[in-house]
Image 1 (cartoon, one colour):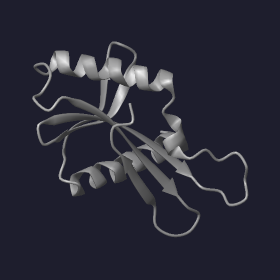
Image 2 (spheres, rainbow, N blue to C red):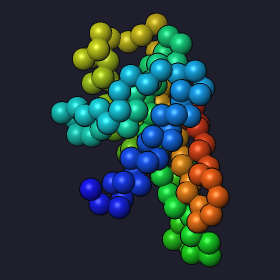
Image 3 (cartoon, rainbow, N blue to C red):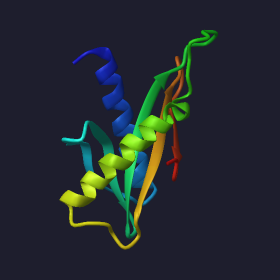
Image 4 (cartoon, helix red, strand yellow):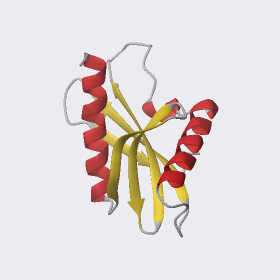
Length: 124
């Protein structure tokens, strides 16, 4: 595994922990569908299914090439996540009573100090 993959896995572990702390149950991680893509985390929040995209970034003081992880859900990415959510539902018994929500967890890893984990509900 390369450094980017290791960084992503670390961020996903932190995200899964945060979702659990928020009372959600993680149903799957890195779930793949034949429709081109992967859902980082599928969770249950009450009677809703949550498709969660996780974006992890290192912060580099003073560098101008940093993009906040929450800026990573473009319209194309949101459409892909909706397609993947449909695939999950087809393979797992259809829509739940509470529907489906797409969330984003952004993980910032500063040069020093603890990671910052930000969970935003209903991004797409």
